[in-house]
Length: 55
Image 1 (cartoon, rainbow, N blue to C red):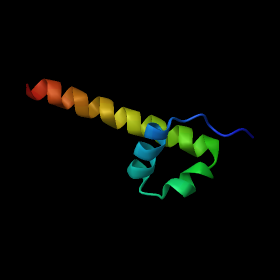
Image 2 (image 1 turned 60 degrees about the vertical axis):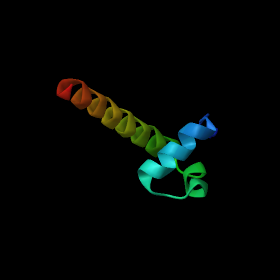
Image 3 (image 1 turned 90 degrees about the vertical axis):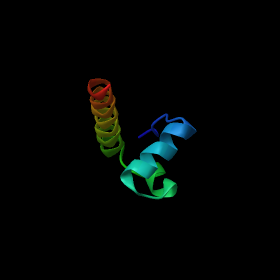
Image 4 (image 1 turned 180 degrees about the horizontal axis):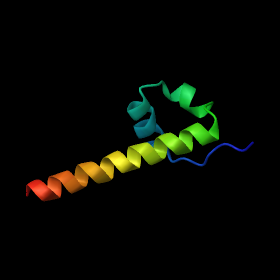
């Protein structure tokens, strides 16, 4: 299986979000990484919507 093409910035953000070392992220199964990326994106969208409602 090929590695997931992640930018360095995205990889660092995802590792921080998951609270795992960057080295572990690079060896993580692709389906788990995709799921966590979706969760992270959903959280960011909800955070943005909350900020807009408060303004």
